[in-house]
Image (cartoon, rainbow, N blue to C red):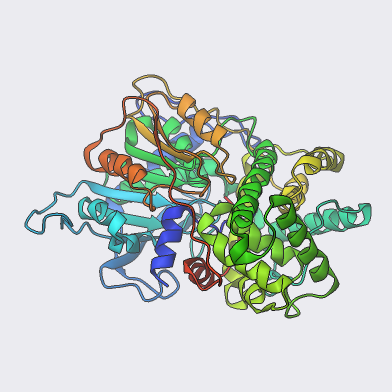
Length: 552
């Protein structure tokens, strides 16, 4: 799954607006190539004690952390061991941001809302930063939560200024124009294999011997250190997308440290899915979401003139790919860049109008909207390269991957016959894991027993492609006492705190009162996006702020 930059709905909404362990909480001991166990357990306890004693010295945020942060948002750092088996060894600093609870009830100005503690948020990735999260308290959908909680974001290890990882020179990261064949030739495959090997070598050369310690288990341990540094006895956490996976690891490793936990757009935690098979599942799901998008465009043929059937829309898209392969739009937009901007629409349906309008304009002789949407931003290259490096390191380190190219070739060739939209691009993104130089872990078998964990709220959209719905069902099954809320017939990636009032009602009831539905609940879908004749919408502004496209 491409690197981190497509944030959750909460993160996206914010950016738009800115236009099984024992019940005692002992960490689990999954077997890995590095045999973590008792040493990591002791090291985590040492790091937690130190963090609680030190706290976090919050002060003004730097421009590198939260540019133009309002006075109410403060930043600091927390130190964690690079290797939890050696807590007295090298330490790395994670950047943290916080906006204190406002205590203001948006529904009753005379009522002072009592503080409930800190709400820590992670937007996913791997490789996404949550440093902007405290700013979300200004959005109406979040004001009741912001009244009761300190809103806390942070950059996980490897991200931003938190001991940043890099795998190649950022100046070389945005290569444009690029190809994106749905049925690649043997020569093209050999080229991509060579690139994957070079990228894996670059990760080792630029990141050094510490590369192996950037993984999901350490992300979960870091979360417990952050909890202690914030002075919280128990953690209130909201994770989106990949954030749901290491949130689930945290729940299994530290169940007695959990106060409340929201897992939004849940990743399938089945160890057999981490991460090779989950990427195959995701590619299949993207094909279904691409079909949804084409059907929507066809229903609005009076606006976009791309055809009144999904098949005709597909022919238009294929025509654009062929033209761009022959001559890049604006000199920078080839089939690969077209693919990236339409992949974003498979994450968020509020991107649909801008993408459809840009495709229509291009096919009718005006490439400017597509060039504006699809041209990589040099200003964001360093951030995008860093996100990609963290994504790759975490997923490659987390689990065994097939090391025989023939397995990748077989599986993706078969899948691409049924799901050509994203299969091969997804494979190329993850192929460095076949040649990864660091030891691999064996994923933790995430499970909690009845009564070990407070109720966990799992949120999911039924047609989410980035986190297929089966993952939410599996997460619900594995975390005893968790409750699933489904947004039916919807596919936006990340549903909490967005435009669906029904979903937000469950979210607020849980975070503010600790109430969960008695059983699996569902909400009607949000309204479909309104077809517009031009791309000057929120999605465009959001793209300009984020400056990149990505995955989980």
